[in-house]
Length: 212
Ligand code: B1M
Image (cartoon, rainbow, N blue to C red; front, top):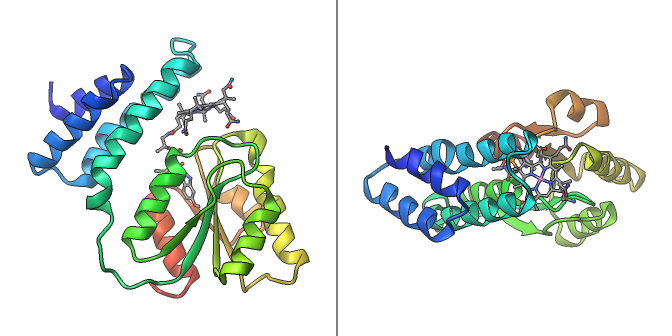
């Protein structure tokens, strides 16, 4: 079994220390961080999602797998973040109200930092007002929102509407993403951008702040 398949396997088994160790080994073998992420850790989490959907996995297994994913991501973080890149501006980031999923959001944060953005991470379950107030207080030109549940997606529209109501449209731009979110939904609610994955989120944010 190759090392990426081993990472997937250990992640499915919720073995956080093993996933960290295998990730370090993969880095040591010279595999690019992006490949370890996409074909190891993210591939593993996608499989977890399938098993959860088919009722072969339950919440405890999903939670353990998520912890293992985080353990692997910790190893990759230094490679994804290049130190010393000059700041391109602030991004307020969070998972929307009612949503406790944060792995994808954290990945977007890591990649944004790696691209030189300062990230104000509000964590999970963030109410609309908090996104907008923080962006105002911090002078952040971009709010990034993540949602993994179809039921929490309306929270994204609430933020976009709040920005409009407060006359901040154009001054504070929004980017949304997460597994159930689509480009079409972004257009429907009037968000300024949609990110399919963490890399495309970085590209879109660069465009939003005119730094591409
Ligand atoms: Co949850 N969960 N979960 N869960 N969970 C999903 C999302 C689900 C699809 C599983 C399934 O049924 N197949 C399903 C949602 C169904 C739906 O709404 N249509 C689901 C459910 C139902 C639930 C609960 C309701 C279960 C329950 O309690 N009965 C519950 C809800 C809790 C809540 O939020 N209120 C719940 C709980 C949990 C755990 C806590 C156990 C755990 C989360 C742990 C954590 O995040 N710390 C968890 C997990 C791990 C998952 C799955 C298995 C994996 C999610 C993940 O981390 N993927 C997930 C199944 C799946 O998505 N396949 C599932 C890896 C991550 C790297 O990908 O987050 O998509 P992702 O991020 C990507 C892109 O989407 C994008 O970039 C990232 C990197 O490429 N992206 C952005 C993300 N945010 C972005 C923001 C951007 C741009 C791009 O701009 C700002």
